[in-house]
Length: 405
Image 1 (cartoon, rainbow, N blue to C red):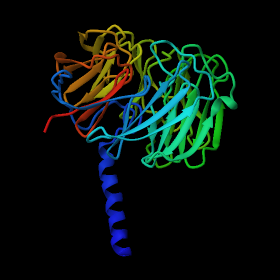
Image 2: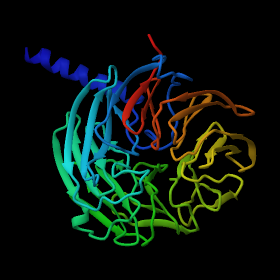
Image 3: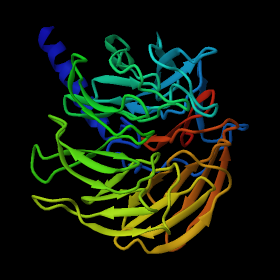
């Protein structure tokens, strides 16, 4: 019996690793790239149920994106008159059945813009735990079954770390650490928290300026050479994830909302339009390859695929540029106002506007709108795509868009 249990456990572990390739474990996916491994349905219809596998109500609002880990969907919400009730929910990705919910009281400030929520940051996972972060600077660690591992109210250590419109930076898991970037006019800092114990491993001061960008991992050429990118309105810097030590920094005016993206060792950041930073040698700062105001993201982060970079501004202008030169290839006007970062899957781009419409664009020499599908509720968080299905968190529901069997 014991041998049979051992074999069964090994099979389950291997199955989990096999499924990990289809996971969407953090904001903008596994590489913070917004690139999906398979293409979801190009269109859906809520009224008829066409390509809507399931839709389930949520107990509160949220601008966070869902994440997908080992066949489960995790999402955060905040509720109450002061949005001080924090929720973490888990659903079976196959049928939408709620598996568990955990609730906590916020320990920090809960003021935010009416269109946002205290559940604005997207949770992250290392495949064993869920790290749910909130605008109130509460950081919750749960295992995949919802058991509390630890809880940090970071406002206790940093009492003025807040702003009147709400925080939104999402956490980043790097090995045994979860990185948080908290920047405002008060206590501004970045910190690495031990994923197992919840202890602070390092903390560095950051500029006292309002900022909503999320940290991004820059993979090194050699083992142990990975760096963490921290972008703010005054520039971008790269840090050793083990110590927080700054390895390089560039003083440059940047947008304080969209996060950078890394593709083929090139960093694309929203600075004076869009700026591409090139490969770095063993010493010195990265080279500025190009900068152009013709590619100007507003709130959405850029997406790079197959030699093209896509930026979407808040007014719905989708621009495709050459990733090597910054030269504009084409522009396309999309309907609505946009906060969420689009997702690219195969030859298609999926953009969610604030009215809850998912606009599907066929990519190529010219962009072409091929479908517009309505959820009927505002959407501010980016969709998650895993296993050929798209998971969208609208104002009051979590929905799975998938081909009907």
